Length: 406
Picture (tube, rainbow, N blue to C red):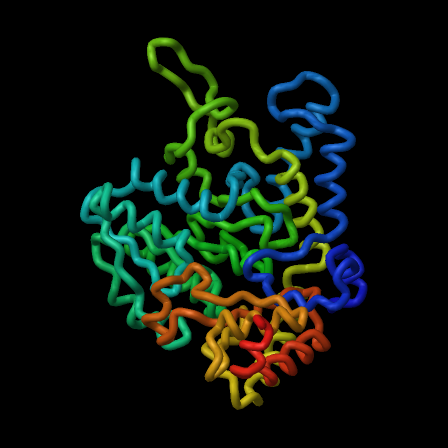
């Protein structure tokens, strides 16, 4: 069980802004003091580069940086050598996509994805259609962006080489039947690639059990700092994959005759000086979540969202786009007020939500609108905050929304 009041005391932002209802966790999460301390300690007590120094604090940072892989390996139930640090989930996805293009894919190969994906899991594939002749096809979805497994099975042809989809979609919170899709992919000789950005921070994700070959997610969505992405990849696949970036620390040696030798994974994917303090802070955040327990976080959020949905469903002025999904954000609009104006009204009430298309710019073909309000919860949110948000939503009107700007 989660003691939410005790947990809230771990977050300085909640102390600094006691009136704030922060329901924009799908964009980024608040930061616990233990993570902030880990980053601050690097700057105030043991600043150095990593993998380059022979002195004590450099050796300490080597242990902390490389030890961060062990934290994320425990989180995902994988080998630490299968954890690569990047700058964000987008960088991780681009490494996966371009790495596959160099050795694993050829013109005419097909990637299966969905129309509910974030831009970071679509645009890199789109570029491959131009540069490599790869084809992108979409798995069938219902109105709440859930995959129809029976219909999905019919999408597999010999040309399909990978399935790439979000474990939890960022707009509607649709949960992918990942284990079943991974098996379909593997049975057809294809890879299974997961966008874990909205899943890993909120629920247990065992990459071995599910059958994930590659996955991308970000530290900043799981109480960590900005500027740190995590790429999980099966070690045998990482060893075959080329890095996108070349430079210092990722090579074993090179000669003036244009020859070079790369390090083994994961080192060969981390060119140049990394975000050292960020990775150390990300590990602190990861350990913090594991101490609370991802099972506990998942259960608490699911219960809180159910209450939120129940109360929002009572409002006649509100349209909810994912009423049957059990997880993720509550995504809605006022029936008369444009989403960004309505979000502005909520902001005037100290309620932070996101409005727009949420980087999922073809989802409108599924849900019938290209701009919504997304209220995304985390384990430090409370029923009292939900009640404040619901009350404010009940008061949204053309008059109120316009009034905040004049």
